Amino acid sequence: MVLPSDQGDGPRVRAVYSKTGRFVGFQDPDQGGRFISRAEATERLRYNTSIGRIVDSFDHAVGVANIALPGRGVDVAFQVRLAEYRPLGVSPAQFTPQANQELIERTFFITKEGRIVTSETSYGLGNKYNANKYGGRWRAQASRALGLPEGERLPTTDLRRAVAGKEFIVKTIR
Picture 1: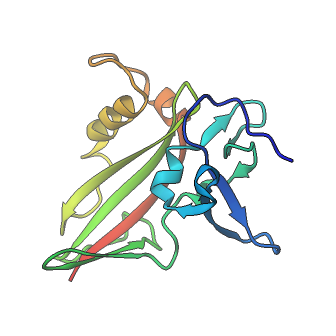
Picture 2: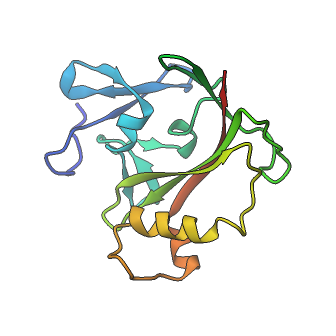
Picture 3: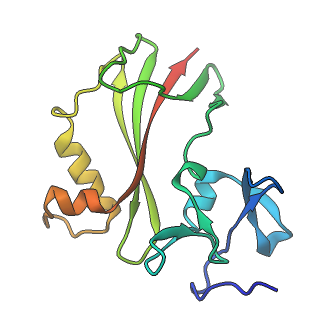
């Protein structure tokens, strides 16, 4: 029997793998093993400093790729339109979005308490990626994600150390 780690009274999560070792999804062990979304699972994952890895509630290692957007993408239906989210397969500097496309930078931060916090930066419909133009916005979002008080500044190197992973997503509105 595997006992859960001492993470407090919060909701738990279990990363599920097939017999071949392929990632299947996340389950809520407190609700009969029902599968939950990546976004819901991300809030329940923790960073274990002794092994230097992200872990589930049972101290099993979870890779950053398991909380990222799946390669096949996701379709979200709205009342009037359909939005298609796909991972960006090239460098964001090489990508030129069309008028109905939006580039989103999704960053996973690890807080002092070991929680995983997700922050998303949108570059706007039809706007090209420019890291120099949006650096201040990234710093502000990183500071908020790490729970820094308003007005407190950390060096960029310290903010980058808290990054567990980053991905670029293309949102296409149809």
